[in-house]
Image 1 (tube, rainbow over the protein chains, first blue to last red):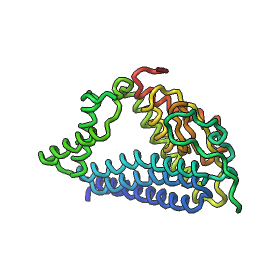
Image 2: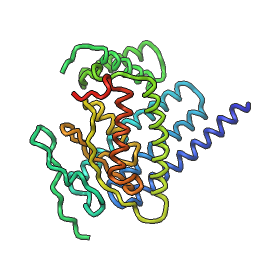
Image 3: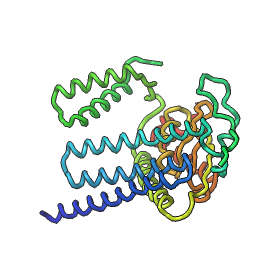
Image 4: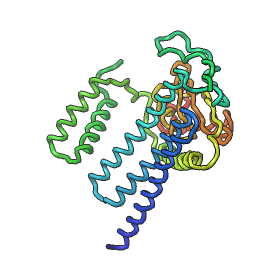
Length: 133
Length: 172
């Protein structure tokens, strides 16, 4: 094994460990964060970077063209889809009143005037009374 | 909607075919041919408006955008990871509205996508007509309050416009 290969393997190991930590913390965040919107943060940021680092680590270890191309595709689709998925879950939660007002210090969306009557999806729900705890 | 074959659609065909070839992992004529067919089918089934008139690519601002995005993603990821594993309750967050300045839906979408990944925010609602973006911020105090969030999203949008908008500061 040449010196260059050892360096690449060490770099791959660092990437894999960091990525594993971030993926782990994303899971912890989903469990520990108190409400829906906060959980969406855990599934976008640490999860995405964790996956990128894991794929980088695998690419550094495999060192083959076609494999790296597929790993790059995985990263690209993750970057494209993860924000959309979080947005859809967050929006659905907000519109169906699953977000409790007391979890938000500022709430521009509920304070905003309803959208003008256009062929748009229905306006967000009026603030519902907080469910009994 | 203009559905004639334009330069933008040719690029779409090339990108989709390249994706197909990468997924199959071989450059044989059969794979390329089926890739072309699938690309044509996708573009026929899901036609997109032609953005080649409002969009371009500027190399240096694109480098700035990508570098800044990578560092911000790194910082934001470790911030959220730390908030997740540290002892103590979830930090206080909020939903902040930002009025975007971009002229076109394409840039609004790009800003919304990137904003979900970087400045500690997740997009909750987009109102295209009003150019309003509503973001949930995980740690409101740590992001400089609502005004700090607005400033960082607008700065992100400016970087996107510098990299991709055909005319800077276009308001039409």
